[in-house]
Amino acid sequence: MDRHKALVFAYTKTALTPPKELGSVVIRLKKYSNTLRDALEDSRYTRGESSVHLPFDKTIARAVEDMVAATVSRGLKYVIVIGIGGSNLGARAVYEALYGKNGARVPLGKPQLLFLDTADPHLYEAVNRELKAHVKHTGEVLINLISKSGNTTESVANFEVLYAELKRRLGTALRNRVVVTTDEGSALWNAAQAHRFKTLSMPRQVGGRFLMFSAVGLFPLAAVGIDIATLLKGARDITPACMSADVHKNFACASAGVLYVHRRKGLRTYNQFFFNPDLETLGAWSSQLMAESIGKERNDKGKIVHEGILPLVSIGSTHLHSLSQLYFGGPRLMVTTFIYAPNTAPSTRVPRTVILKHLKGIAGVPLSGIMGALYGGVKRSYQKHGLPFMELVLPALDVYSMGQYMQMKLFEIMYLAHMLGVNAFDQPNVEDYKQESRQLLQARR
Image (cartoon, rainbow, N blue to C red; front, side):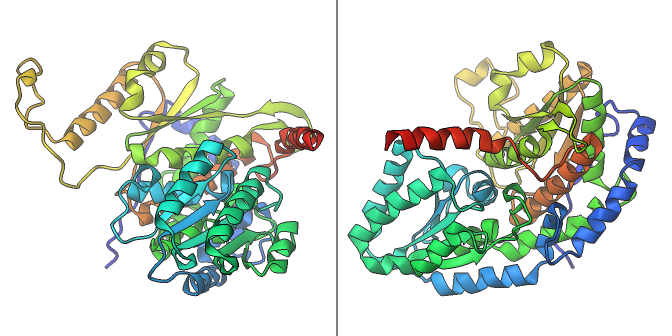
């Protein structure tokens, strides 16, 4: 019997979207569903939508497993992921969902993931100090450099600096401890081959933000012992629901439909309200997915539209004490999805103290119970204020639930982009700042 549970998604009574209005929107997606069905079988990855096939791709999973077998040994202490945006957010989101912010709860004896995701000297020094203190030979460290284009400024710079430092301390055998994940044939791929670094490829036609279930996300997680088979199973298991013609079963389509209806009514902000602090990076991952896929200067007919929905990430209960006044009393410009995983682990109970004589109802309550009450109270308040929201309950903070959630969000953003009439898979304006930055860097040489 399958012990895994499915996500629970609710919206019909709280999203303030009339069923007839939502239904008419969903009907428009029938033809696009055929495109997604074709993409599910597209093992050659000939289109952007083909990312939905990745959880079913045994060749990629096998390549990752083989690389783990070739690089991971009992003495491994650290896997350093050097990448930014789509090259690291997915793996980091899963890692922190399981083990807390920056892996604070990694079990003793397990290797840790360290992330170098921007060219910040303080971040680099912190990672370098950790490695100096605990890494004495090459078998204790593994570097995974990830860049789809192969020329990401921050990633290449971080790699060059870290590799030079570790090579100075550990010797030339360090080349055997580098895995480069990039497009086959890119400049980075060719450089890696020339330096005899190990390489993993990614589907060229699939954009970086859609590559979570490729070697980009799978290899670093597998290298530190995370069960990627169950992660992929979660993604596969939710896929039929994401293709269903029944909007009540198709969470991805329903969520996209709600966002579309409210967008057409003028709402431009989407608040992802996580009531588990360990899911903050998951919010960053889904924010990139929405921002880069939906935020477009032109629609798919070339007309200037400046389309977009601003994704926010809120954390309960922290942001209730800084932003709730705006949410409840401010302008009605936002749709919210609450994401919550009930905490079933044993939780410390609040003892009876002097202070609690003045705070009734708290003594003897577990900390998880307080969070649950706050979550329930927020939902009630949203309803009383007439604020539209959806609710997505994860069965647990585990790899299966992460697989379900992330695959659903990939489908959701494709449906939403199609309804809004924009290309979900390009990012023409991302190069704007990169070109300006390169000119400034060249001027300093």
